[in-house]
Length: 113
Length: 111
Figure 1 (cartoon, rainbow over the protein chains, first blue to last red):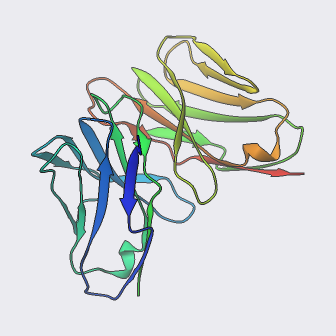
Figure 2 (figure 1 turned 30 degrees about the vertical axis):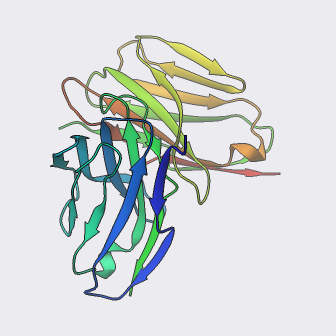
């Protein structure tokens, strides 16, 4: 199993550009999450999904959108990138509930200039 | 709402010294998880504690869950340079569907 994979690893965007961060898991997990981590800080939940077709907002959803059309994939869309969205983005998944062990992808380091 | 405090925020130790980080909650917890994130890496699950007063050990790491299930600690005996990283607690309380993450304790070990 590859676990949780994320692409790209690094990206530089200009202000106002859009992009999609890809996340996939091959563990047949129901729950998937997107977090952002600013330098020296903890994890902030952006969005999460409890299964295909179901998503919900986390702490910091503004400026982002998600979709979950399959169990495996959970892309994160950034519209109109802003410097405040410069961060490292982690995708994670857990088996049945949000309190099962969360498995993280390697992260995407995004810089908005 | 649910609040979690993790202390200290940073800790520098000499290799061989012990290290402890604490996670404190404002409410009674259902369970608590601990994760480690190496510099430049992603969080990796270490352990989950569920029972009041529970103590679990992983080699030099000792994890405790408080009797009142409102706090937890991670203790590392005789730190090594491989212990460098940030240690996060993540906790669940009541019917909250999401884990609440602490801000982490960053550990630096001087060789």
